[in-house]
Image (cartoon, rainbow, N blue to C red; front, side, top):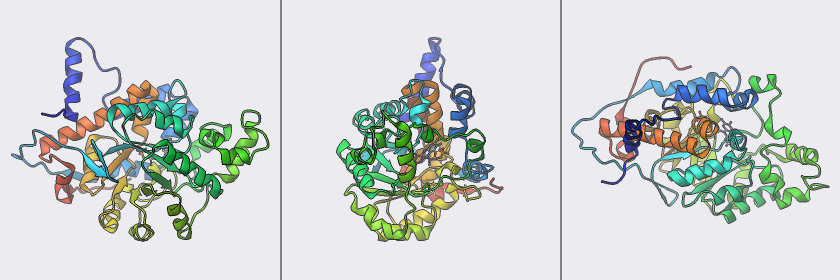
Length: 392
Ligand SMILES: Cc1cc2nc3c(=O)[nH]c(=O)nc-3n(C[C@H](O)[C@H](O)[C@H](O)COP(=O)(O)O)c2cc1C
């Protein structure tokens, strides 16, 4: 029988027989608690915090509690196959690493983007690399091994710069471009405002800009001689408030699969489809951008219906293997996590990310085994029952 993700529990139990207990947390609450103790207070606030009073962020997590998976018996799901097809790639599982802009800073050696890429290489879990990295995208791509990576673009106001970033991502071997649409302006984040927290303004996580020939040509002096001027230039170009009229331009930037991140309304899905995008990424940025919004999971079924067969990536609020399974049953083609693996990175670098991913996959795999759903295709809306209760 092929190796199954759930076998991670045997590895842990056998290690325990020889007296070695897991150093990294097994439960999300413990992961969160220890990451908080490890990260500096300002980095913790940036990573864990969200918009407003964090209603949407909490609702993202609690939305999963509104659904229960219905166990099916005598299915004989002794062997599961979690693989999925996405943009012509065969992935070992539907799990992926959502783009997280301060990863670099979260690792103890200050190179968390590279550590995350190494964890992707070891696990086969694709990484969506953020625009905002400590190390340039070429170096991140260099650590991915055979695992596919995707490049996430915050479309800058400067179109030449956008084209340059996309061309570099293509040349570096990324397999698709994820354009994030919900962050052309920063949301209201009281925690970060109270602590004056905005890592990029201090010159952090700007390597993709400072290494870019188009960006550098705009500067009077190289960034290493005048980082303050580079930061000011970055502020002036960072994010363009795009409209639907700009979508043909975005489409024209690449022949790679183009995926739009931040889509929650069915009508937006239809317009994106009409403009020729290859994938829809349903997300509310983990509740970091606009408070008061619906949980992303509540938007997922409408997005999937409107996508009409186009792949739908999903994130926001996934904290367990059970959540992964539920998002699949609601129609997601692939499911991303953000904060959980960032906490693993803070605690254990690449090994910490790997542990978080393997734990999520093991739990999902074992739920699919116990409940009789041996493949993602078996997980349909019929596998779920809606439970009574409030969200938020
Ligand atoms: C600290 C942090 C930084 C993030 N940076 C980015 C980013 O650079 N680009 C992006 O598209 N999304 C970014 N996101 C959003 C994630 O891609 C993802 O949508 C979100 O984390 C999913 O929610 P979760 O944290 O509840 O899993 C960031 C999220 C966090 C927590």
